[in-house]
Image (cartoon, rainbow, N blue to C red):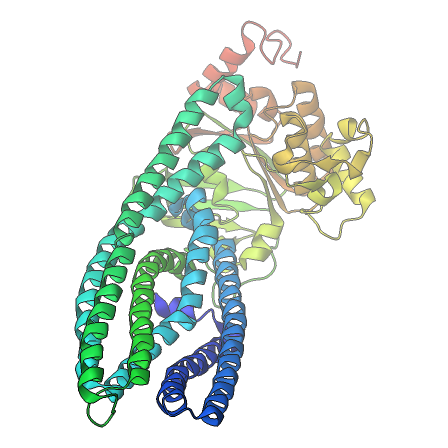
Length: 589
């Protein structure tokens, strides 16, 4: 995990190196100042030697400014290194997510990925800055202060040593107990983010069903669980301060008592015991040692949070996409022919087959309808064509070659998919259309919209093709959204076009116009149309009937009416009683 994270330091190695250098310089200045202060008291004040006081005072000022400069530069480089490190972590995660197959995406929840990209990275960023600054500064400062204290008086310094051992033991207990709770906090963050995301994305449904109170309670529960977990962790960490203060005051009392007795006994003669200046320096070192020990305890707590966050980040960065390009990928798709040979498919390696023994042979340029009940694996079937998933057994061929032999970008550029869930992005209509072809002219975009019957409503908009689409396409209807997505797919000029129930929100007349436009203007493109309405697939060259992951029938509309019970049942249910068809003449109403 650490290797994965630190590999993202990259171009920020120099500031990562300079930060501890300046921290060490700051510590050196802090260690020198108490010695200069002791010299002022023992040599300058005791002997009324003003030149020595002035000289040591000037040196102290210089040391203070050098220490201040080192602290500022350490903070500057530390901020640059940690912010850059966080930037690279987010970039590495985001880039790997873009390479994920659908199977990889299924493994992580959307809310979990958002938490990893935001909260988890922020925690690791803070920990990295602490590592470069405090984690370097505190141990060095503590050791140096301890050495200086023993140099002045080993007997009194042993008071520090015992105090450090006792305090270190209790701080270790506090940190380890707090770690248990902090490691659980991130799961609660996932639940909180999931609640927020689901509510905001479905806010119209929430209001339509008057479920605001229910959603408030759900969010309150998720937020309350996070609050309780943090309270438990912070309640344990809160023991740091009283333990630290108790130790500091105990050390000051012991040093004052023992030091005063030693000064009185020695007559302020360093050779016999201890001087007043030395006792003053020991007090400074006492505060330095104990404060650095408290910083180290906070590092333990912060590390527990960052380690839990770091593991979650590394998990995303190290996730290997389940679908990758072959060693020597084919970069061109010959035509739109599609072949399924003995295909078996399951979403999980140890799961049940969703598709079983699929054998289909589709000629380039054919229009194929796909119909079947809910859960019959219609979407699963077409997802294999553009290699959004890989088959478990058998092979899927496009243009005569197994899809696993193609470069994925080349394959998906030739297999255009309008998914079941239509997604538009914030931007103008033209911006959204150019997802199909970023170099498409406005004339080409208009032509694609005419084919998809989207020009009808676009021309009525005040700014026409420059109309701004809100996030998720919230300012257009479901049918308008579907037509824009179809136009976007057409701009790719694909060899295979897949419409996954993507005309369900348009009326039958518009649906018929779209199908007619496809037949006249893209005759060489293989078209696969998944639909619930018989009227949407009746005019197809052939129709696939799926049932429970198996091909139950494959033929023309007339053949299936005669030979396939499932198709005939669906047809009858939709035509009897005035559905999409007029049963007598077989035409659309």
